[in-house]
Length: 227
Image (cartoon, rainbow, N blue to C red):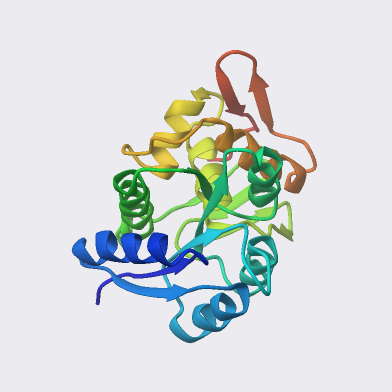
């Protein structure tokens, strides 16, 4: 079955342009022109990726995002205008996986969607899935769950993949570019600040422990290994 993409934008020309590009890639594409339609379409079609404009009638994109995050961990790419710098950060802080600034190249958007779907469909064979353990953390790759000591961690799909990557490289410094390549894919052309926001979320959920900023370089996860 082709992956399903939900495009949410109140500008008909943008929706139609993106629909043409994404259908050419072989995806099943659903459109919505306002926030209420978006929520209904997400519930009915369970898309794999949602392309979500912030400025929408009836229900704002941020309110749609909040609703989506209560109900699923679908990959959300937010669209923002150049002047809406604060909205980019708010969107990421509310659980968006990535953002793209208008005006944008449709080819770049398609590349982002392709990279997101490659990440979502790159399944590790069951016989290679591990349970990563350190003195305080446990991450089950098969169950896609993690625990801080005995407390379950509520992680988005992006946060899980970031934490997994950091734990695999326990004690090593990873640059933002390396984290982007591991988690968002090699064809990601966005800004590295998206890493900083998601790392900030992980830190809060880890009680500000284990993930250290190495200024001018990147991030390091460090906890005593358990063999």
